[in-house]
Image (cartoon, rainbow, N blue to C red):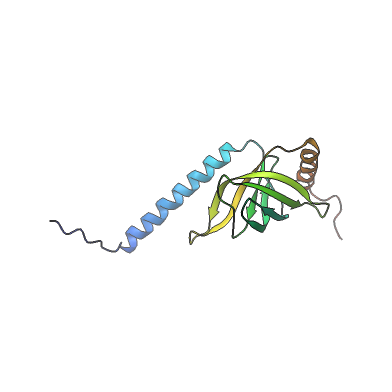
Length: 145
């Protein structure tokens, strides 16, 4: 019987594994970006949400007409339906239904947020969202002197 004891990786092997993992992560980010049908806009909004068995709060990092990334330490499970309240531009909260499509983990492998696809938006919700996205993508008209 051969000795199959595990040996620790050398510093060079560990660095190669880290580099390989980063290449895989970058490729996955590109694949996710290719799947998006709507342009994302960087927009910070306070978000609260609930699923069938949890409640969570967080902030958006970016948003599009199709969905939002919610930065939160306790995202619902992938595939779970969620009800979100988005505080956009200090106006009334936009209430939307969504589905968790993916999780992002931090460097320690812990959840740090989730991508949520909007589901069944009403025309009024779509208009509010488009309006907020348009304002977020524009430069301010006036600057303080």
